[in-house]
Length: 220
Image 1 (spheres, one colour):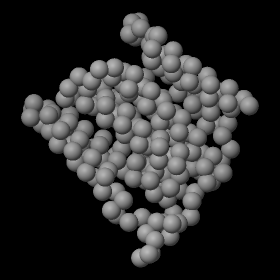
Image 2 (cartoon, rainbow, N blue to C red):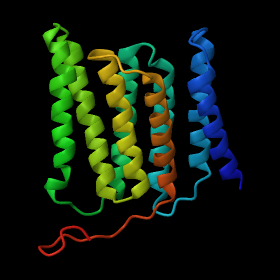
Image 3 (cartoon, rainbow, N blue to C red):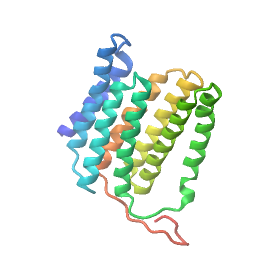
């Protein structure tokens, strides 16, 4: 019951931040941005781990790092680096739940998507002479796609949805910042970002699905 109230508070405060908080003063906007993340951490703490307590601890660590990143993202590179660290937490958490290998072709869509984003977004920075930024973007694409792949390997539906939403959110942000303006960017980015974190937090209560790889049934 209390956990459901916290989830409701996350939704309400997320809507308030996204649609009703003005850009200025910046300090107040940052504070309001952090409240939904603090509530998501509380939601994660209240979620009973059905898979692993270690998984829960690492996920909560990732949520905390991402909350810090939300506060420093207004300074782009520090925010990028902090989110990078947050994704490393998620990679280790999902790796903890990925017990068996999967066919490499399952990763093909992520690899193609990553290559396309690298060529389009990072390529625009290389063309503009921003070599360091272009390299940083490629590194970030690499870590977030690794996070997505590790989530897929867990076969936990909530973790996979969360990871894919995170990839979508960061993609919209990157395209808008470096390539072309996207209408209603803030709404697209923050709705999918908060949803991603909620799904990842909720995955603490998931069970790892056992599966096998063989010639007749590649994924069971």
